[in-house]
Length: 287
Image (tube, rainbow, N blue to C red; front, side, top):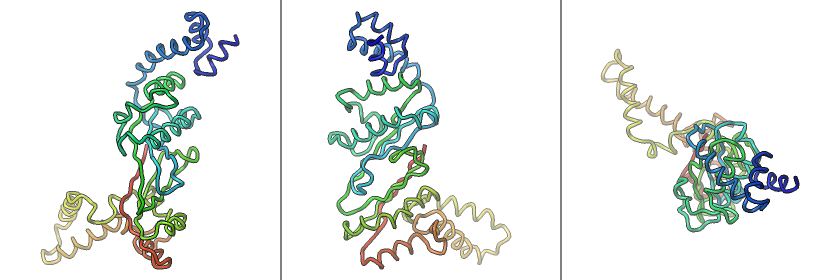
């Protein structure tokens, strides 16, 4: 029973499986763990076709605001997404990706084939976890953030723990004074919140796909059957400007103060602190 308990604690497998593993391997713990893993591979493979509609966006070291990693991991149910084993795996995986200098700065699970975690292959780690929790788990994507001339402001909405949530955002702000900009992170966090709440299509007009603007123009034209031709251009221009204000980050009304746009809010902080601040990139992660 002591061996069964040790095997169960180390693998999370059921009592019956642990007892059988020890019986098949002459009470050798290491051989029994390997036996359970081999059996688990068969179980895991059966689960890998099941849909994964839940999961987490996991951050590692984002409090640095200059050098961190984001990983998107999916599972089948919200119950497992909140499970400590799943959340611990998300944290360990994000850290392993962050610390590995040999993999590309962004990618999918295919770019992580050679990754090891605690001297174990990622494939074996996934197999063990799938076997333990009984659900399919998929690593969807990851991205490393690092810059010497920018800061990254992050926001995790409805967090499961300090580093995981279902909705998260990252905004990169370039600056001429990184040290001072890092002191303004709390003030600037509302911009990352803005991305999660309002889901802008782009930072400004130049970052929105021209086809989207052409499609919007076509929609406006179809709604103007009774408008005189000499007024159409003016109306189209006005409606497109409204569309851009509502769908670009810099044009949107600030969620905490609708009298200001995000652009004017950023300019205000820049002026008050005698610092250059410009939004370079933004990312929205959702499950």
